[in-house]
Amino acid sequence: MSFIRTSVANGVGEVILDRPKALNALDQTMIDEMHRVLSEWEDDDAIETVLVTSSSERAFCAGGDIRAIREYAVDGDTDAISRYFSSEYRLDQLVANYAKPYVAVIDGASMGGGLGISVHGEVRVVSERSLIAMPETAIGFFPDIGSTYFLPRLPEGVGMWLGLTGARVRGADAVEIGLATHYVESAHLGDVTDELRAGVPLVEVLGPYRDRPTSDLPLRKVGEYFADENVSAILGGLRGAVGDDWAADMIGLLENASPTSLWVAAAMIEAGSASTLDECFDRELHAAEQITRTPDFAEGVRAVLVDKDRRPGFEPSSIDDVDPELVARIIGAV
Image (cartoon, rainbow, N blue to C red):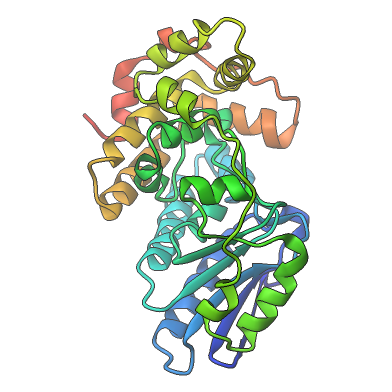
């Protein structure tokens, strides 16, 4: 069974993500098929624009098939893990360097791997139903899919905030911080996609949609508390904000994450700020191969996605007890 549907008409090649029961989580077959199709279309003069949509009303793409990765990790199948991440990052890299307009329509959840096949593209359309996040630290992993390149290039502190906490942002907020390019109310998305499929130029289709709701993201606070890559300093600052409900919420998110993952994520995002996209992908592949061997990864995925008890037993349980040498090995600094 294929979880990807495609169509070509009026100079537009459309990829429809069609694994609704799994919220379009990208399994190996989807990654391989999407890479093949996009590669063929890039060389096809009859196709001028690529459109990526979802058959699910709930999600664009909930991320990578992390349950399968956990199974590989538990079974010790490191080759399967390497193949998955290397092929996923190759797909993301293709999207980032795509020679034709690439339009992702995100109406619903888009997390982790879903951002890899959208944020790297030229046009990212969101709605009030869009929900965007990089929640990897909660499962003993780290923000990947090239996010260690684009996160540090968001407004000050925003990338570190999203990468460490897994905080979720809605459609208009995603445009405000640069993760999306256009905001269209969900009620009008059908008209937009129909016009795009008909071959109407992008400028004409999206030009009328210049307005969006005012963002209420606390960007000043984000910049104040998350400008540092030192996890202890970030938590210390937040804990000092007595009586601040937002700070308390952020503390809760950080305390529910794997301490090792927090340090790895912070180091990867900081390194990505001075790296090319290719360098970030190379570093992420090494880190993915390493961190999936740690007990925190299997335990985090178990708690969040398998048993869903939301009570992971991370080791160590405190950010102060994380081994710096382990973090260095994971990110390839030694």
